[in-house]
Image (cartoon, rainbow, N blue to C red; front, side, top):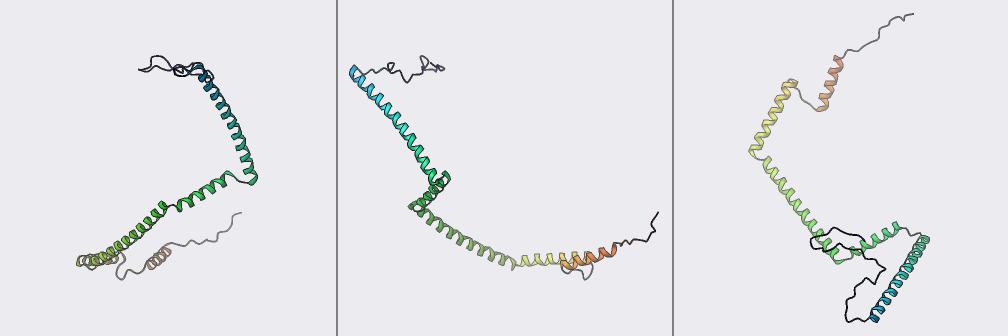
Amino acid sequence: METRQQGFLDSEPLKEADENTTSDVNLSNPLMTEEEREEIQLELAKLEDEISTLRQVLASKEKRHTELKHKLGITSLSELRNNLSRGWLDMQSSTAYKRTSGTLTSAGQKTTAAFSTLGSAINRKFGDMRNSPSFRTFEEKVENTVTSIKTKVGGPGAGGSFEDVLSSTAKASSQDTPTSTLTDTPERP
């Protein structure tokens, strides 16, 4: 018997009931006779025996089921794959899926149209902004600043493409680097 910590309402510790002792069960039904009680206990015992037999039969059927699947080459993975495929097809054929799919397609089309309209509006606004007098003034100031920097850094007539600048830099660095030549020195014995 196990005891448990007493709570506020417990008057005594709980006792573990033994499954095989049915005499401790208090059947306080005053309308039941001793014969009826014995009949019920016999029926209960028969049911327990039948349940036990059914469990044994089920276990043997499951074992045979596994053996037959093994002979056919059916693995758990292939069963899972088939079940998933069947479930996916069942889901696709359901009305809820079809309605949801239609709604999402419609929403996607509306979203695409909205982004297209937004892109057109942004392009139009950028075009309007570029044609504005304040943007033209800003653009001129940037061009003047870039030209001024090129003139100060590279001197008059400086500029050109990036490749021109790289090739002129490479020429200048090769002319500044002295080439080392080996002098003929006699070998020492």
